[in-house]
Length: 56
Ligand SMILES: [Zn+2]
Image (tube, rainbow, N blue to C red; front, side, top):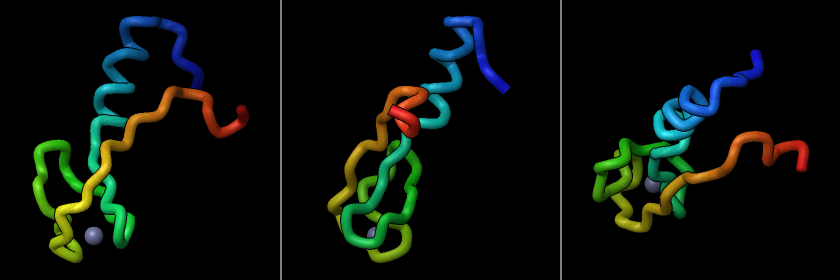
């Protein structure tokens, strides 16, 4: 389902990509997390990609 409304895209991006991914185990954590919920690692990286990068 493609999204054409640019405002909606911003909202979706914020919801989908504003997450933290653990560098150790790859678990997805809430954006405000300071530790990985699975392995307790503090090495979290922000998961921010632009839409449509998979096919690029
Ligand atoms: Zn982890």
